[in-house]
Length: 95
Image (tube, rainbow, N blue to C red):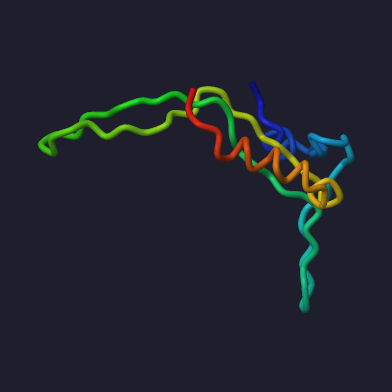
């Protein structure tokens, strides 16, 4: 699976996951900047463990098994329901 971000690096436009609008890169000027989208890199995870030599117990971490990039345009980000959905994906428990 190729991520949206990788496709953008190949000259393809990033599009908002929610409304489909093409988004632009952040624009910087001397006095300010304009952000047109927010990117959440998330996906399906599973618990994994790695044993560290000489340190006793294994360290448990969440392994990303299927990456998902959620692109949210600045317009959709203003919608509280969209922000709540992003927060849920960000804080979702392993499963």
